[in-house]
Length: 124
Image 1 (tube, helix red, strand yellow):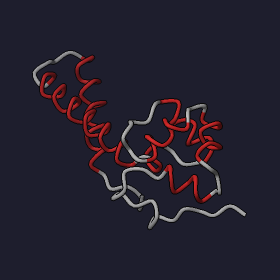
Image 2 (tube, helix red, strand yellow; image 1 turned 135 degrees about the vertical axis):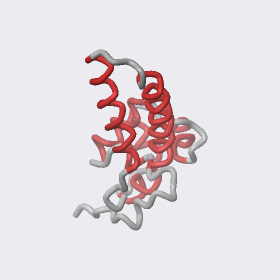
Image 3 (cartoon, helix red, strand yellow; image 1 turned 90 degrees about the horizontal axis):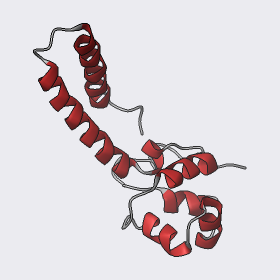
């Protein structure tokens, strides 16, 4: 029987839930490392947050556990999101005076990114 991770466990305050999910499913580090095609020492570094997750690890964790990067690695996700929103905001300032239709479309796109990031998540 699969245990569902509650929003209490998947709180924003903790930067990674890889260890929690591994333990929840009764997997050892070598077993999860093999499933994710990483070394045991790499998995240990991912779990203790001394190494940033790779794209393959982000997708692999989603495939294995059914939770996306935003849920499994919330600290990492927020860091990437923050950096992208900062760049989008800077680009919006650059495009402010442009009047062509392409600039208008880009402004709408970038504005959506900034607004979406400021919306609260659904209890995650």
